[in-house]
Length: 116
Image (cartoon, rainbow, N blue to C red; front, side, top):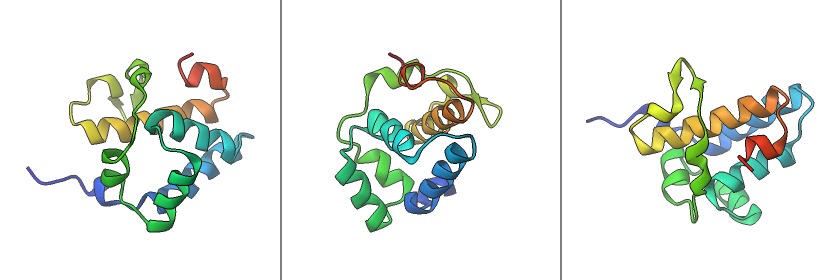
């Protein structure tokens, strides 16, 4: 099966778009970073290194040092697809991140976004 083109997107090019979406709604880069670190287990330094190296999405999520087990609690629709029904692991991770950034932009509290 051919790999999805989204997997080869450079995370460093998507990252500013995630921040812009959050900031447009009065949220912060720090909150976006916290969401990414929560989901993946990356430290802030490791996150910045992936941005600097221009890691693609597939590698970024595949190399996640400690994916948060609570990310499986993320439910809902992104791009017309229920995230909990996505079978392909990398696409599910991408959509988890999309969903949490959507929640951030909609004004949800960080506790709710991080499933605390």
